[in-house]
Image 1 (tube, rainbow, N blue to C red):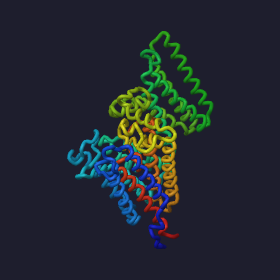
Image 2 (image 1 turned 180 degrees about the vertical axis):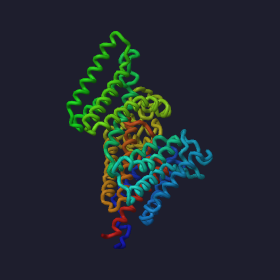
Image 3 (image 1 turned 90 degrees about the vertical axis):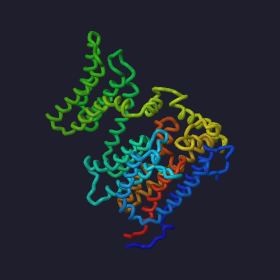
Image 4 (image 1 turned 45 degrees about the vertical axis):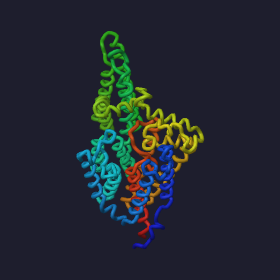
Length: 488
């Protein structure tokens, strides 16, 4: 049965409070970052602080409109919204440059007169709705690998289209949906495999330039194969409960290494091939154990090891051929393979200087020298957090992060208390997207994450990002409010 509950009483006002506080603090930071001594008025709409007021007011209007829509409409039109977002992404790729201009090397914006819109922001919302719709269908259960295929397709299509717009950083945000899938029952091995792939990629790229001996192998490949062997041994001991087989593999690996070292005195031996041979030999051994004793535990280990070897071989190709030159440089800067503080590392270096100069209490509002003198590029968009650090110091930055943490905890609480699966899944999608944006943006400003160019929610200047996060949040608030409209 249903009861009439006013949206005024059903709305989660605590979340709205965090939303408003972050928007106000973001606007103050934008004003501080873009402050112009000759044009100091906050209502000067030729300046970014003035324009942000317009985006904020329109964002409030959009949020209010979303609250007035029947909550069941979001479920009903989820696939239509997803299809429309895909259509806009395709249009952005193939539209003439008068409509989709080249902005800083990417074709990700649609321009209609004075309005610029980035369809990728709508794609995040649309993908969250489509995943929620599909996973909440009556016959769907996330039990095995094949159940992930349609979900992967829903996530993969918009991500690829965004990459074709030369917006790789925005496309990486779609990785955040894996966190929701994990919460909804996806095997944690997927996240472990992803983390292991990142580890191998870093080792191969960073250490492949370090030779063990001249023309006799690289530290990167040998260390990568060694880590694969350690995973095999650890798997056999802790999951297979077979220490005997693990000990045999360990002795065999040491024997192969010792024999190759001795033979290297008289013959030319490439240690890369020795390390790969050790992994292949161990895989053959695991197959023999599987076939003769039928433990039925090692097929996965063999596939994992072979896949890891192939990935190590392809890491250089992915880095050199798939990634753009500026992306390669950013990764090299992050891994300390290169250091060009006047070039590729300039943004991050200036950002760290600005944050460090703020000290404990900061230099004060509008008193930041790094930001006022425009030393930090993109200081009111992707690098807006350095303005907070310089003007308000450690405690001001901590306060901002604390409010974000409170918002994330509130989003998780809202997701958990939903009565229907669609709303719960959508809630976790929203929390995952916010968490990813916050982690990557703060990380790249501090120099511990690669610079991939994604905004800080409610802080970075721009209408598209503000509207996108507002739509994400207020759809969830509307779904949560609908929870009180029914009584069981």
